[in-house]
Image (cartoon, rainbow, N blue to C red; front, top):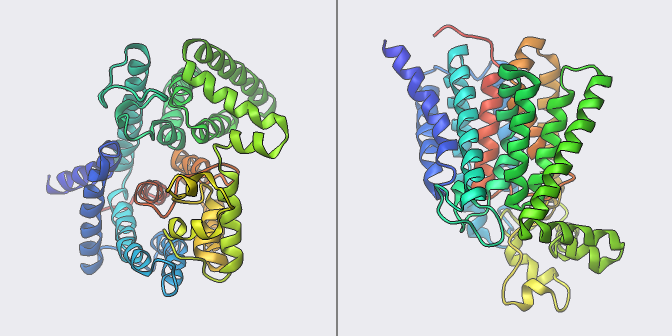
Length: 405
């Protein structure tokens, strides 16, 4: 009985991170609980760091944390850099806690079903807001669908796009292709109207992965064409029904002008930010300007008359994963991240088919979130970094075989 209660509360802690994600910094509370629990488990010897998965967890954490540690001594904002270094240590213990919490099949099933249910709720709430203007998060933002996250926190499309495999894969397993297409159509409507084009691309990748996994190439290609047709119909309907979505499409189409101004307009004025990020890394090629130091460094590297600086503001981050790593942590950061990715891929390939299958949803979510040919939120920020490690925790936990308590 006591063991059953323990497993239930551990799964609840993991689900609470996702449930509280729309409520500001409250999502840090279950992370803190998991961190403390992970420390206790390590001190009591309940986690064997000599085993392959705990070792992999250590390596993946090091791939993220070592670059910020090595960038801190000469960072442009030393205090902020060292604060991030200290704060992100929590993820080391949270990963170990998650692997312990998900060591049996029942716990993995509860977290899988619970995550899918929460994402379905986020999606249904977004559909309700699109139809009526009502939502658990209050009234929508005038420009974008905001859903349960609220008008002051426009992350609905990004979160649903990144985490969509956690809904699509279980739905496909339970309800087959029809379930996948229905869930995909609902997600398309909400993510399109949420307006974040990075979310559009993440959802497109998630749908492609879901359609091509485990199917013959010819059938997968036909289904992809059908899904593209469905997405086009949804986009046409959204353009007709929503002026804000039509404006996003018109802005994206400006890239077809093939000139710098049109491309920069289509990219929401990000070209100068990306160029500044390249220059930052070039001037600090070893360890960058320090994590979260982009905002202080940007005015130094921004071109004359830059939009962000002329408004008395600054660009907060590089808006792209590889450029963020290069600008803030230099070549050391790129190397550490590359080693972590290679280690994860190598471990994945060596696992039996059954273990890979049970971890398919978080695997595809990580692939979608980390896809390098996209724009991104800052991975060294509290929100996107937390979401990354929550996904890594699920991935490592779902790769396990059942272990008796």
